[in-house]
Length: 87
Image (cartoon, rainbow, N blue to C red; front, top):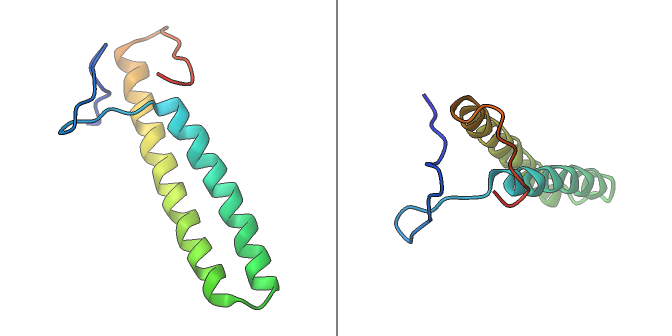
């Protein structure tokens, strides 16, 4: 079972916590931009760059899935609590 971070937890060097909503926005931006760059690279016949962009897009999709699972766990643990972009 995926657990969310403890309430009011502070990240440390050994055990960092992240702002899930901000990560969600950044991963979404990364996904969209990498797909656009991949299409442009393939159209310009720069296949190696297109492949690199596709790999980064797949990584962004995996990151989005992980973030959504952690957000769902946080919602289960804290029902009715709204989090800002930076929490």
